[in-house]
Amino acid sequence: MNILFLCFFSIVISLSVVSVNASIQNLATDKSLYHDGDVIHISGKVDYVETSPFVILQVITPDGSGFAHIDNIVPNNDGTFSKSIRAGGDTWYENGKYIVKIFYNGNLEKTIEYVKSPTSSNTPKPSTPTKAPSNDISEPDETFNENIGTETTVYTDIFVENPKMRILGYPSFDKSPQYYIDRYNNEPEYRSWFDSQFPEYSVTEVVGYTPTHITNFPSGDKSPQYYIDRYNNEPEYRSWFDSQFSGKTIYDVLGFSTYIPDWIKTYAQYWGIGEISDHEFMTGLDFMLTNNIIVIPNFAYTEKNTIGEIPSWFRNTAQWWSDDLISQQEFINSIKYLIQEEIILVD
Image (cartoon, rainbow, N blue to C red; front, side, top):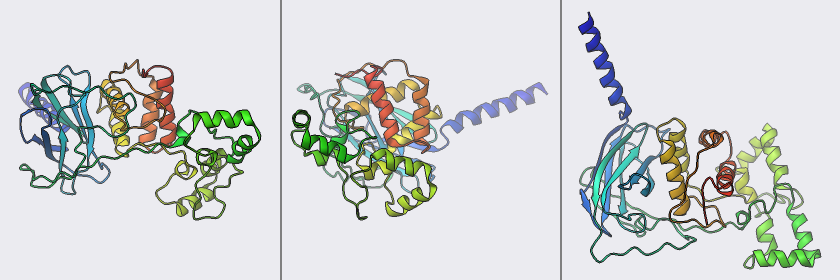
């Protein structure tokens, strides 16, 4: 009886170990050794489900303290996926064994080796990045993947600043655009301050609303908070808004949008369920801020930021955002708070 119990227990243990990676069938790279400028072709297969639109990719540095790359991959309907990234650059700062790790309702990893070319030297990062990480392949790169047999095209995005997000709290959600325009037109000191802060923008571009297909919506004499409150508290109003602006949030229409890719929500979701550790999430968040994957205007990031203790409320915030219980802007505001309170240290 004891032997049967031990056998059964052993089977249960074995099945539980397999189930951790049950949704990831394989992970492969085209080589095991890379040098500066080499293209790393990553491929594999997952058990695809429509509710999990992204495979999350991490490339972990040899000392385990940071990331050389972090990204997303959109799997095909048959579960196959592939991605091409470039080795080298500021984040590949030492020779050694790097871990390529993917998450998709489980995680799987493999090790590759990176050795700098004898003549290579890393160029210091600019204090304010202007585009996505340089180790993505910026031009279309169509390559046959020997493991999966698919072609991969990789692009990068260029960030364009939203002037509403340059100064935290300005313009205020509880003040109408007309309030600021009147001050600009009637108060010389205010005009002087504004022009010094936004020399390349007009006051209307910073505080105003972009016209929509609906006449006088949003109205310049109504504050953003007026519209946000109506959207959150009036079901009929929410239904009308969603029917008129499909695919856009109330914050998008009011002009308070921040550049943050959709796959970051999946990353936050994996952290919320414990698939990604606290250290990995915060280090990944730091990497994404530093490399302009998540953009919060008017903050310059150091190459090596310090991450403090994670407040419990921030985990809740990330989980709520991943479940669409709070807005993207509220999630961004929580990151700003971490920066202001020096939990994430920036220049």
